[in-house]
Structure formats: structure tokens, C-alpha cells
Length: 246
Image: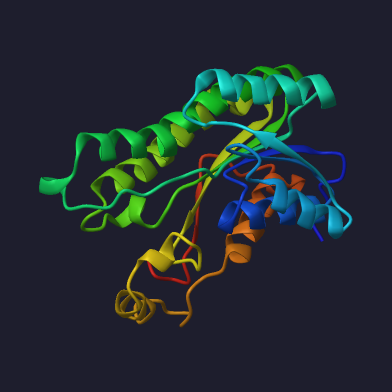
């Protein structure tokens, strides 16, 4: 089993779905997890981790607010002295055909899914550079690789994460910091439940492994990239999509 004992991890969007699964999996492997979300929304995640014998804290953060992210990083350093793992998972969707898409729908998705990652990475890099180690993992999407009608804003934000991560990976590789992306396909979450059952069935027929993914499938990939076993992997996109896109 991958051992993350003694590691300090921040996971944004940890209140449910993929973010909750990532927080739980990192904690199960020994990491102390700062489960970050708006308000006290990650409290349930922390409770589940505590019940399983893991170590975590509920952290309040608005990923679209620079000061909020800076405070999260500062508080983590003040309490634990380091940040070993940053997982940029927080994300939203505001789907609409481009001709009908409101500018606010574009701005909100880009701010939450892409600009927030920039802000969090920029803040976390300072302590990581000092300690000459770190793992940065951002959650993209198969849509960022293939595109999808009605999701121009979402696809742009998720594709942007890939380019952003590769650029940063080149900047910080010499300091022992790796930067990678996990790109899930269709996964059972609250976000995908908004997709009609018919659409989900149609998507499932395009998955060679014959099933929709689970949050745990994504969490396992994140856990690997966060581990010492992945120390020679950086600037990569790990697709967790059942073979839907190759």
C-alpha cells in the first residue's frame, strides 16, 4: 500500500464526490488532510476520516478569493510547518450552448476551475520550494481533452489546467516538485447526476471497460501521483476514463 505517513495535504472541493474520496484515500494512506471547502461544508468528510482512524481538519476556503487561499496555505504552514501535497479539485459546471452562454457563466467556471488553481499553486509553491519537495495534482476532465457540446467554458477551464500544469512542471522540476493532472471520464458524482439517464447510458456504451467510474477510481490515481513511487513522473495527464478516450 502506498505510504503517505507524515505528509501534509490540502484538498480543495473536499465536501463531496471526488474531492471527498481523494481526502479519504490520502488520509487512509497516512496523510494529514486539510479538507477545504466553503464554510463548514467539509465537516462531514472530516467526520468520515476521523471515524476511519485518519487525521484531518476542516478548512474554510473560497477558491475564487485570493486572500482566502493565502490564508489556507498560511494556516497550514503555521500549524504543520509544511505542505507536501496540493490537490486542486474544486470545480463547477455551468453548461449551455455557446450562443446562449452568459458571460457570467463563462467567468464563474474559469474563476473556479482554472484561476483558483493558479492562485493555490502560486501560494503553495513558496513553502514547497523551501523544502525542495512537493506534489501538485489538479483534477481536469476528459472534456478538457476531447471537448463537448454545451461545455465550452468547462472544457476551456479543464484544458487550461493541463497546459498550466505542464508549464509549472517545467518551472519547478529542478526543486523536486512534481506537477501532474488527473483527467476523469464519466464518474458517478452529484455533478453527473444532472446528466439525463439516457445520456449517461449513451456515454457508458462508449467506455471500453463497460462501466461508469467511481470517485474512488480517481482518488487512487491521485494517491499514486502524490506518493514517492511517482517521484519520476511530472507534467503528465493520467486519464481515468475506462478507455473512453485514448
